[in-house]
Length: 451
Image (tube, rainbow, N blue to C red; front, side, top):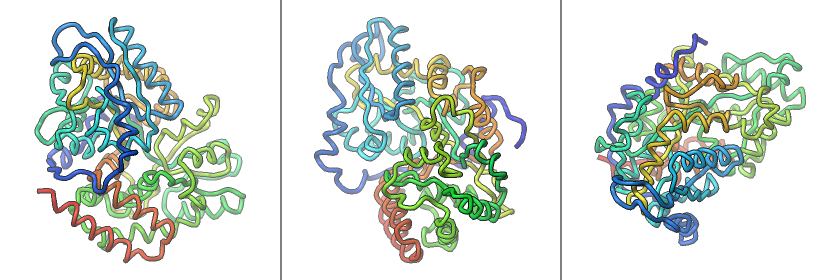
């Protein structure tokens, strides 16, 4: 791996020119009704106890600011709470009411949430999913928040900008997806990092002989397996094909996509069985307990490790499949914050977002949650763990960086087509033709609304 670049230099590569220049129109909301109970779950979280501030950001900031959070797991939940406490200390007269919802529920019900009574500020992601809701007039323009900010590269600003050229997102942290493992277990068993797909297959066979499950796997929530598809697609077909496929420009029943599923089918025997009944947390715990040898996931896998064991967690890039494509493309999703279209405390919401755009806020978060890295170039990295330092190096040396299937694609397509399609593949991996034809048919119907 090449020598690590500085924070600002690696962030400049987060959004390649091909993506920065793309302006995708979004017409149409999530397909299918989420149901009254689904809408109520999140809608009930927003809107209560807000007071003061109300206008466009002028005057003294005061009152309650509601914050909708998807940080439901223990480590990120504690980090979010500490960040909000620091904001309150720095802004006397304000109170942040945190409304935490299960991460997966938050993602799946975000459409109903934003059309109901959303919180003033809420957690979300960069990419198409951010632009989608901005184009649907379901998010607030925070261009004025961006004025005077520092430490964000042009690439990060592009990743925070809607199709209309306005900013709707404050980037906060990111993390790489890769193949995670426990070095102590590998050293004990004499394993070496696989460089190619054949190496990975051979290693998996040896792990089975040693009584291990080669690859931890849990897809009960639907989205984790998307990461495996993305890794395979980036290695088999390359970055540009991948982003074009996510944008609806390539056919899902093409030979290239079929090869991805065929390759994945060959690897499934190495995966943990009964994955559709297992959460990613449970799969991560099998890695932590040294029952599994590898896990294809984001760096947040470390949230399932006790603090004293996180030094025994490392990762490597997904192995090479096609030498002409190599391993230069990775995924490193950007997490951050948005403002609802009509916040009850707009001045307070913008003050909070302004704070979240500072290195000070990121410093608090990455110290509390060492499974992410800061995106602001002014953030203090001196206290980074070995895993965080390697993540900076890994992201910095990447040739191309994707977000994630459910962020790079239309949200309705990702949620309503690809989650059930991939889960169907896991149940029955032998009908790739039927599966890909079905995906392509649904894709044409959904993406036909784009212009």
